[in-house]
Length: 379
Image 1 (cartoon, rainbow, N blue to C red):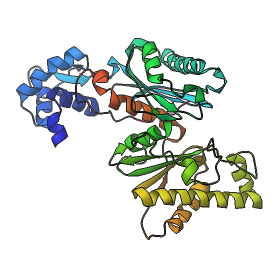
Image 2 (image 1 turned 60 degrees about the horizontal axis):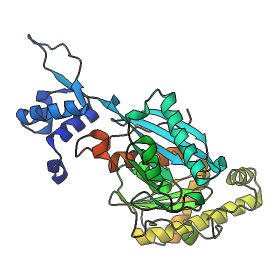
Image 3 (image 1 turned 180 degrees about the vertical axis):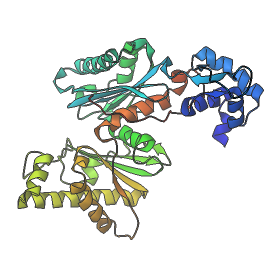
Image 4 (image 1 turned 120 degrees about the horizontal axis):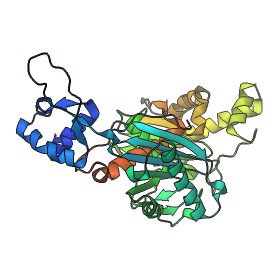
């Protein structure tokens, strides 16, 4: 109620039109529980911002001219989310109503050379996505960027083991110079958790432990509906500490019975005892780490993402059975597969850009993040 009262009439009217579709002045007044005069006075501001315009008239049942209807102009601008990695770069572009207008996957930046070259490669991925969708760069209102590393609340990369050339770099400032719009940067696993909370499997859950299991194991926390950063911006960065058996410096998972996780699981499916035993040991180690974290924060849900979540029940089934034994308490601790998969960090970056720079994105104060619909990257 308090948040509702703090929002301006203009913001509330714009959100109603954005999220529920066109309406007349009388409908807006009634649904927002505001006087007709208040809504009518707010409409010129919304028109000047370009967010609201007259909708096509509909034929009424009575005599006389039909009432004017207003619509949200979602095409007035776009917001970009980009997930930067060594193996791939994913870009999603959404209009102001949160509808994804373009989605692309590119080769990663591992071969790009210097830190500056890697940034240029990232920028070119964004530009290519916009160009192929016929979207002018000038329409970009904000960009959210997900990357591997510790990122402070100003968007500066404090440390990145995966992209060491970016350690100490102000990636957000460099991208702002190129695109002339606000840019926000954050850790990719944290933004994956944000995506699962906003539009994925955990939309109704406000205390989440997100565990990404891929080449590495990393975690992120959503507490009281807010991503937890911590005093040093490393909350959840416990892969090498909580999960035993990882490489000390890089945190990479080391497989013994085959070079990759996919091959290990395939060999296990074929009855290879060494692979079966290795997976059992790995599941126990992951369950142990999750149990330690769960006992510390007591989440309502554990969301498992990352590449290994693609093994589905071959991995998640044994993990669900192993965690309660490690926790040792008769509590209900749901372990669910992330819905967005590899697309989660880019969509989380999109949400982060909408949320962090809402005033710049919409041109009025008090707008919320739109209900974004996930896309399929790489199309």
